[in-house]
Amino acid sequence: MRIIPAIDIIGGKCVRLTKGDYDTKKIYNENPLEVAKQFEDSGIEYLHLVDLDGAKASHVVNYRVLELLASKTSLKIDFGGGLKTDNDLHVAFNSGARQITGGSIAVKDSDTFKGWLETYGSEKIILGADCYPNETGGTIAVSGWQERSNQEVIPFVKSYQKKGIKYVICTDISKDGMLEGPALTLYKNILEACTNSSARQSIKLIASGGVSNIDDVIALKELGCEGIIIGKALYENRIQLKDLARYI
Image (cartoon, rainbow, N blue to C red):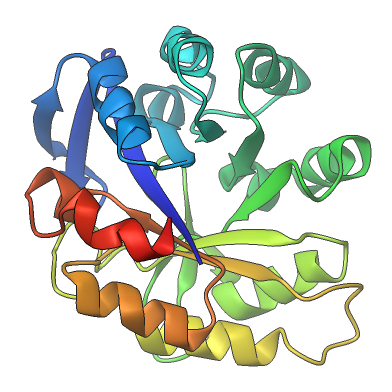
């Protein structure tokens, strides 16, 4: 299982939100490169970089931060937030992203998103499937989690699995930043629903949100998640980077 620390950017600074609420912004470091270097020095290979300004503005904003981190570290960066057009995608890849995550675009403009998948391939395009929970799983959120769509998370993921998507990042928004444990049931249901289907390939599910301690990491590994994104638990020292050494 891949360990993928998260850096969320507002105004060029490293921040965290709670449940995606921009009013809960907490700045952890004004220098994202410093944070990325700490991850790299601990043996981390991957980074989840989110342009929160871009997610709100519906176009890439903090590409200079991506460019800086990609050029000054060896981290393999997946980048999301504000990717809406072919030009946004070009900016992200030209700035050093190894992969991009498309969430809102996959809901609002599926033709464009499918075009990206066909052009760049399933190794470079990640489906973002962040949701507000309900009794059937959850409804997909869009526009930096500021809006709810009418799409249910499991059918949404399965529909793109049939189109060839390989990597899926899923966040139960009610868990995000709460440090109360991840959405194990949701992930279990997604993995079960997307196994032995008529799709071209199995999905690689990346869990995000709610991770609070090393036991959560172990539980997600046992569940079969391909990767785990960790944010606030690292910044609040609930998990030490040395504790993750066995997974790196």
